[in-house]
Image 1 (tube, rainbow, N blue to C red):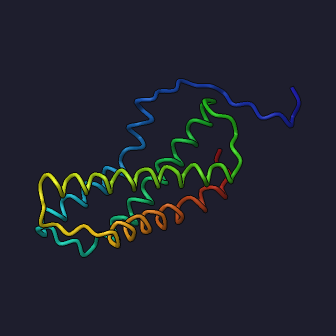
Image 2: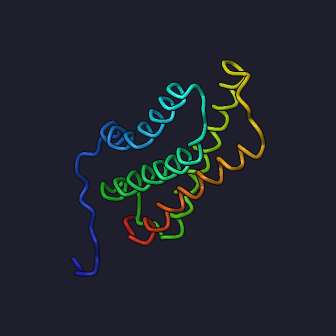
Length: 144
């Protein structure tokens, strides 16, 4: 075998173990957000911080998932730019799903909650900033 060839040894890969190892960050952010809404009676003064943390958590989860998939030989080595776009795609999808959740919660449970276009755009911006704070350094580590 040539010394320049990198081989990836396939060991026992478990999707359930991967999901359990990834879920802690988004679950922690979601739990803190829900507890803060409950404890403060819906005072959203730190909504921006939670969206920033949520974007960071989703980007971190995506980075760890891609890194583990590469380590176990499930994925080939990905270019850095593709890793960056993939992580930001995860963050964007999660942010949009969260905004739908807020809208449905507003319709079903809390019609007094104020939802505006400005709030939605600010939330998505904070998700994106959080994702960028993790995705750019992660893509430079060339983990995948």
